[in-house]
Image (cartoon, rainbow, N blue to C red; front, side, top):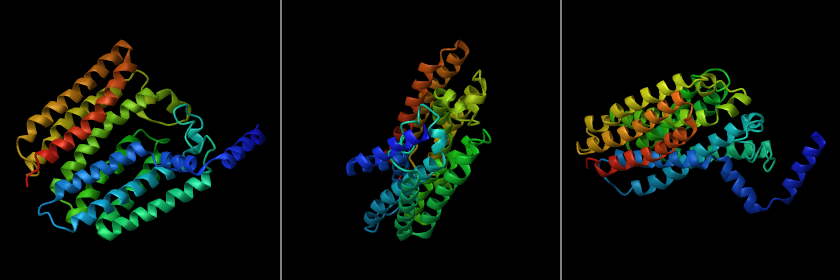
Length: 308
C-alpha cells in the first residue's frame, strides 16, 4: 500500500504544471486567514496615522506584502507539522501536502523562505514591526500548533497571533504601541473565540478523529461551547466601544458598534438555542458566516469615524 501511495505521489509530482504548483503553494499559505491578517494590519495602520506624510506611501505596500508573507509562512509551517493529522481529517485531506501534490520538504523550505522575506520587508519599516511579526509566527507555530493536541487552552493561545496583526499595522506607522492600539488587538482577540468555536463545532468529529483536544470536541453536549461563545460575544460588544473611549474614533461610531455587536450576539443566541434542540448545524453555519461579516464592518466603521 505504501509503495502504491509513493507511486501515486511521484506521478503527481512529475505531472504537475508550474501554475498548479504555484496554486498549491498559495493554498498552503491559508489565504483566507492570511488575507484577513493583511486586512486588519492595513486597517490598524490607517487608524494609527495622526499626520499623513509621503513615507506612508512606502510603508503600506511593505506592510501588506510583509504581513502576507509572514502570515502565509506561518500557515505553511503549521501544515508541515500537522501533515499527518491533516491526512486523517476529511476537512483537510485534500490540502496540498496530505494529497501529495507538494512534498513536505518543499512546503517547509517554502514556508521558512517566505517568512524570512516577509520579516525582512517589515524590518525595512522598523524593528518593532518585524519583532511583532516574528512573535506572531512563533506563537502560532510553536505554541498554538502543538497545544491543540494537549489542552483546550490552545484556542485562547491561538487568538494571540491572530490578533497581533493589529499591533503590526499600528507599529508600522507609530513605531510604538499605545492604549489605542490595544483596543484594536482586543477586538480581534475576542472576535476569534466565537469565530473559531463555530468552526470547531462544525468539524468536531474530524478534530476528535485526529486526536485534537479542543473544547468543541470534548464538550459533547455543547453547553460549555455555547457559554464561551456568548460570554466572548458580550465582552466583544464592550471591547468594541473602547476605540471611542480612548479617542481613536468619533462617538458616532458607538451606535454602529453596538448594533453590529448585538446582531452578532443574536446568532450566538440562536446557536445556544439550537444546542438544546439538537439542531445546531445550520445555526453554527449562520454563526460562522455572521463572524465573517462582523470584522470588516467594525473595521470599516472605525475607518469612517476615525478622528483626524
